[in-house]
Length: 183
Image (cartoon, rainbow, N blue to C red; front, side, top):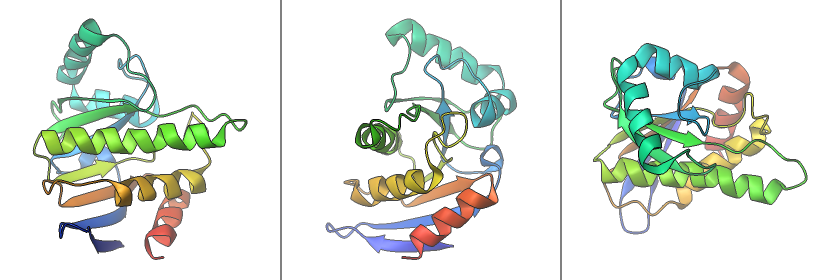
């Protein structure tokens, strides 16, 4: 499932949703739903670090030495090690706080914006996003899908990125993204 949309300055972007394992995609860059330590964890973060091998952790440790931990909404980039992608963009999603839904959406949208900024700066044409913050961080899945798609559609592309993949590991997220993209 996918859509193609034009951006006012005539750049055309393709958006697609896939039910797949993001660690197996041969794209220019995948996004990691990282924790602030950047040292690996569970879920997609653990899978990326495990399958990518020690290069990713080494790069993350260098980043930590230079800047410290990564704050929610921010993103950093590393090599992809043994993954079929060239780069891994690590972004830290917000831990859901129901008392601050607007702030949570803003932080999540920043994950997408900062990841796309890094992607364009590194010449990435095909970028794959997981479902950021919808697992252990408990961001409501439907709201996360809506926020992600809006952030991508509102981003001011400079023409490097050509395709963005929303990669869902479970049927529920896949259905939510598929429905949102078909509107």
